[in-house]
Length: 141
Image (tube, rainbow, N blue to C red; front, side, top):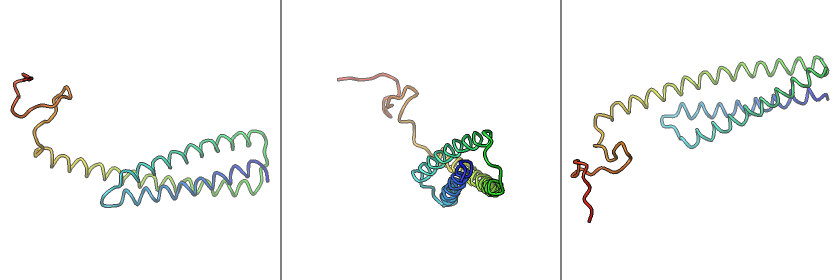
């Protein structure tokens, strides 16, 4: 098997793994309450897989430019990769909509809670403010 075919097979395997990660992301974003730790792990996994895919794409181009074999096998593998990539694009777009929806809900919840928030416990300088000592004078003993 030529190196180009190996690279294409590796790309297909990475795309399959990426689909699993994006499906997990979709489940997290569709849940009533998001587990931020799980979503963070998913994001890291997705970034790692995308970096691997980018590396493999560079390898594919190098092999293709080196005059590697052009065959029906290469064409079929590339068609599979193209179909998987288009499907992942659709999943990613859907996940983006889910994420936007979650952000909107969070903003709405903050807007509801903001008028009822407790008075500031920290000033602009990051120092604790005292409810009874708002004059700015510190009393030390």
